[in-house]
Image (tube, rainbow, N blue to C red):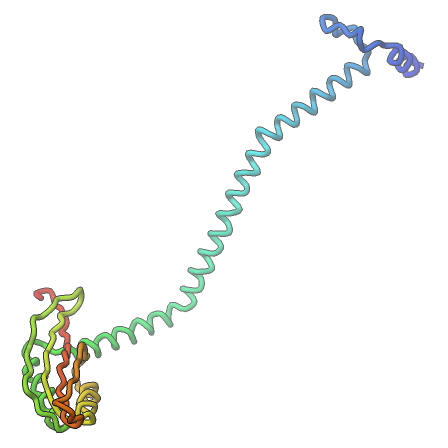
Length: 204
């Protein structure tokens, strides 16, 4: 019976007659509706100012989690291959030592010049001159250019250049020019720069 009275009073109620100065006299259904609207508004505001901020923080944490997983996988891979890395380090040190041993010291340069001269003579070249140039210091080594002036046939020059690769010390060839005397292709003159290297120690 009370419900029917409430519904009847609600139907008979005129929304235009709402008096905000006398809210207490409003019908109960209107009050419940207003409270529901206010509750929804408060919940929406709470979501916007609090839950959304938490979601942003969650997204940041999830991104950090992905980065940490990648970092963990990388370190786990390195740890699993630690022995292989150590073996590679030993091999690299041995290779480096072998390369350093091929770099002549100051006292070995005359012997290297003699080896170059012998290579030329063994391949039938006439060595006009072998001149040491000014050293150039690099980060880990010192570069010593050697200007070579020689003459011979095309095949003799080719054999000489190939023979330079067989020297016990590291020698690289640069800036070569070949010219012929007149129309004689069997008598060529070659100017070439051979560069050798020595390890740069603390005093170099």
